[in-house]
Image (cartoon, rainbow, N blue to C red; front, side, top):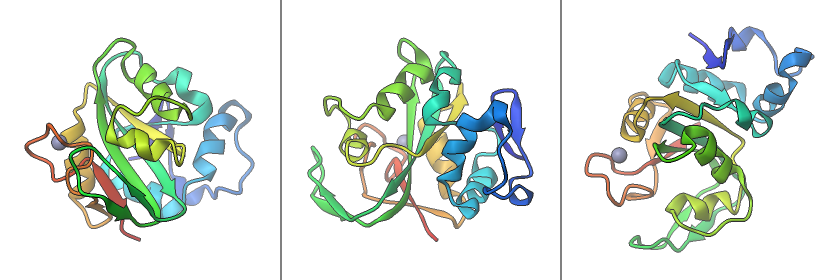
Length: 183
Ligand SMILES: [Zn+2]
């Protein structure tokens, strides 16, 4: 199963090299996709096959309804972020997935737009990371829940919980809502 992108499904991604000329109608999304390593996309497909991919320029296509999402972030350098209620712990460079839920006004579209915005007031743990590196892309799961997204990601070998308690101060079931890609 491929990652559904609105009405389209990106499939089979492995047979569709990133260097291929993108379909003009889908170029904004392909621009976001090109930033992601193919093995990461395959691992994401395996964990969250029904999620829809949202890129910087396709934010407007994200559903205005509520649901869960996963931000895809590339941290170029190790950072130590001073997080409220957490011990300062260095975060190693690499690819990270952050699982969140958006059930407020504007739903997933409004929340993802906020996460993609470079300058914002720090409100959540994740804001410390997104002010250092903008998300490369995001996955939306309308009607979903952040803990289910985190659990789906953690279910295989590809992603592991990172920074205990990150984004999960109020969560009693997840070790963290931040997961590191293990490759
Ligand atoms: Zn949770």
